[in-house]
Image (cartoon, rainbow, N blue to C red; front, side, top):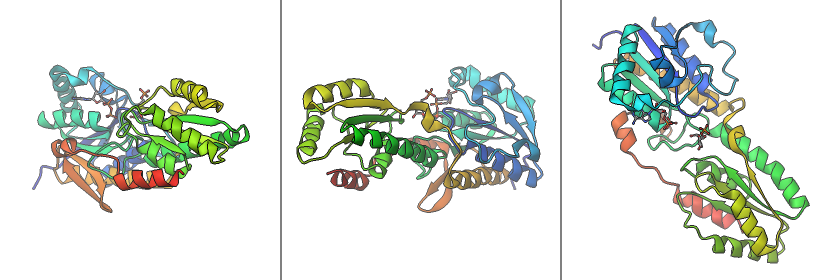
Amino acid sequence: MANKINTIGVLTSGGDAPGMNAAIRAVVRIALSKGMKVKGIQRGYSGLLNEEIIDMDAISVADIIQRGGTILYTARCEEMRTPEGQKKAADICKKHGIEGLVVIGGDGSFQGAQKLAHLGINTIGVPGTIDLDIACTDYTIGFDTAVNTAMEAIDKIRDTSTSHERCSVIEVMGRSAGYIALWCGIANGAEDILLPERWNGEEDKLINHIKETHAKGKKHHIVINAEGIGNSQALATKIEKETGMETRATILGHLQRGGSPTCKDRVYASLMGAYAVDLLAKGESNRVVAYANGKYVDYEIDEALAMKKDIDEYQYDVSKHLAR
Ligand code: ADP
Ligand code: F6P
C-alpha cells in the first residue's frame, strides 16, 4: 500500500491553453474530496522557485471552468533546466509539505516533472497545449478551442478574400507541429495547407497550383501556413508577384490561445485533472495522463517523451484531394 499523500500542488507551465482552468478546478476538487490539501503554485516552475505558493479550496476554483487562460498564471523558466534549479524546486516542495505535484503543460514541462520525480516528489503530467504535439495522447487541453477559434477567424477572412477575389495566406500557430494548420485547412476548405512536417520549400509548386485553380475559375485562394514554416508576408509578396493575384497575409497569433474553452476542452480537461489526482492517490509518480484509443490512460514520463508523433498521412492525403 502506497504512503498516503496529504498535500499536493498544481501548476501550469509553458504556453497557456483554454481548458487549463477546468483541469485546475478538477485537481483541486477531486483532491479535496479525497481528504488532501491543495497548494496552487503560480507562474509555473518560475513561481515554484520563487515560492509563489497559495492555499486552494473549493471556492478558489469557483467560476473558472468557462474562462480561458490559467488562474495560476504560467511562465517559462530557464533555471528549472539546471540540476541546481531542479534540486531547489524539489527542496521547496518538501519545505511546503507538497508530496505530489500535478504539472499541466507540454513536453518541456513534463521534463521538469520527470526531474522532480527523480528527486522524490511524486509528479503527474497533464497534457496542456493548443499544438496537439504530445506524442502519447490523441488529445491535449486547448487544441479543440484553438482550432475552433482559428476556424471562425479564417471563415471571416475568406468572406473578404472572396469579395476582393484575392489570395490569402493565413498563418496559424504550431511551433513545430502542423495539427492546427491541417484541421483548419480541412474545416475551412483551404486550397493549400503548408505543414512543417511535410514542407520542402517548394514555393514554385504552390504558385503553380494557385495559377491552375485561378485558371479553372476559382475567385479566391486560401493558403493555411503553419507558424513552424513562417515567412507568411514574404510568401504573400511572392505569390502576388508571380501569379498576379492580389494577396494578403494574416498572422492569427495569440488570439488562438485565448477564449472560453469548448465543451470538449472543459470535459476532457476535467477528467484528465481528476485522473491525475487518482494516480497520486494510488502512490504513482513520473507519469503522464493521456487519451488514447478512446480511453484515459497513463504512461511513464520517460516512455511518453520517447514517443514520436507525425501527421496522419490519410488525413493529409484527403485534405489534398478536397482542395481541388
Ligand atoms: P511546454 O511545456 O509547452 O513544452 P516549454 O518547452 O517552454 O513548454 O517548457 C516549459 C518549461 O518546462 C520550461 O520553461 C522549463 O522551465 C521546463 N523545462 C523544459 N525543458 C526542461 C528540461 N529539460 N528539464 C527541466 N525542465 C524543463
Ligand atoms: O506551444 C503553444 C504555442 O502557442 C505555439 O504554437 C507557439 O509557437 C508558442 O506557443 C508561442 O509562444 P509565446 O507565447 O511565447 O509567443
